[in-house]
Image 1: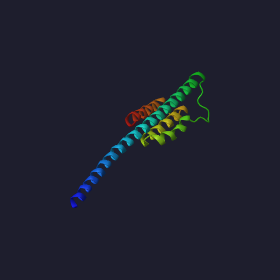
Image 2: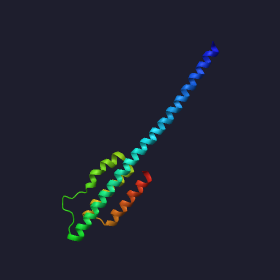
Image 3: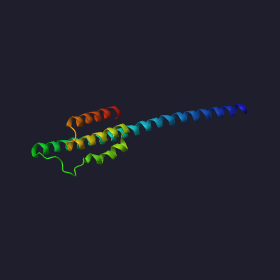
Image 4: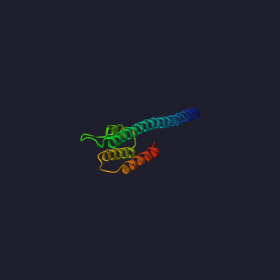
Length: 133
């Protein structure tokens, strides 16, 4: 009788170990897939932010070259609206770099800084995207 109980105990222990191993493998697959989806979404948002910054930069350059006008007093980069999405989907380092980039765009638009600083911030942002996403 005791041998049968030991046999049943071993069988149950084997089943428990097998199920735990399967659960851990599935959990790691799920985490990997979730991280992949989050990174893809973050990459999309970062690309959209760069497109908005590039479009605003081109518009301001055109207005400055053709009309000699700087932005009106109420100008604020529309990329500020996208920073919330960046904060929710991207790592904190990327959000910080995005905020610095949008601020640099706004400062350049108001002629407070040179375009070189804006381009440097843009390059730093792209480098962080490549590193983390």
